Image (cartoon, rainbow, N blue to C red; front, side, top):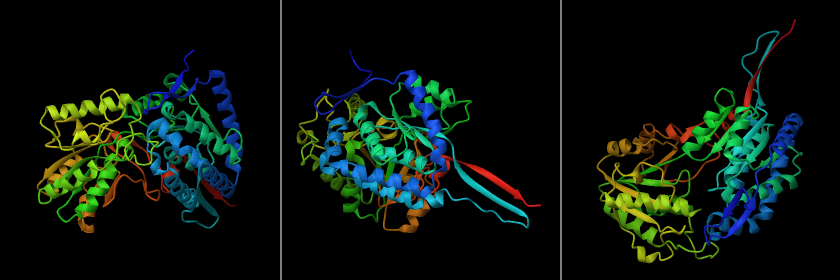
Length: 461
């Protein structure tokens, strides 16, 4: 009998893992246990909760030699990059360091015989729906702040990375987290929507597609549960005339092609000032052409397959449309013989002669494709960067800090970078606008989504 959930490796199409959906009775029991466990967990001192999270990180570090090849087999990221441990370590350590500030009681002005305070208290049971593209790192943003704040968490992970759900559960168990405080569940879309609509969750965090986010919003309508939704992206970059072109080309190639372009904040469109356009495109072409497409289990591979054939076909369709409308591919396909129709292996694409009538410059590609347009001025660049239904990050490549901030103030985006891209700074709020979603994770502000304010007005008589 076929299982409900089947993880297929993009490398060779083999079955990696299979799971069945949890029964309604099992889910109800898990929800009841989470609700009971949450009360005791919320009463646990913050320093003790932090120690549990520190032990969780230590367990992930211990497992990492096994996690790296597992990741490659499940979703295609090359083993040479060492998995997600370094980024997880940075992100968790920052969240541990700022938790006290993020959860601190606010003390307004006091009066004789009147004590005022606003406490940050946990919301209760949090549902975290996790994507496959950064399957460990994407756990950190919603789960760690929720646990630090005293919530119980139920995690629904992607079918493409089933083994990650097992590993995260194992690490939390080894860290001594009380039973019921964290639970991994397997649910279909219908069951998830039904439980949300039944008010079984106090907060829902979802990372995924715009369509998926809209479905979550519909399910939660009228429940008054709060939502954090990190959805699509079409992140732009602007290369100014004073940019360090060699540095910009290297960084933007990494920002566009790393993880086969399957990054929520990956660079998908680049606007280059006409004064440096030819030189920049030549350097970006050299960077892209140097990538090695192949088996992600081999150390020399720098570009693995996309996570599934389905995603690869979406990318190919966008590229075909762009070429049919006049775009030009400047990467020699003969350098990437591993790529091919019907497979998950997609060569890096660098397209010029593109415009905003092409899907590849407007719709999320989520693959190893960068479109490059020539612009005449800062004004034109800003207008084109804002001409998108998404707004997660945008980068400006310049040696002029004031110009970067001045232009950044006009960009419709959650994060503005100068001379950096494809990075979530855990000290800063990770948020987007337009179709990118709603709510905030990371930074001290990220604790607000998983807590509620409880006001105290204490009058002495």
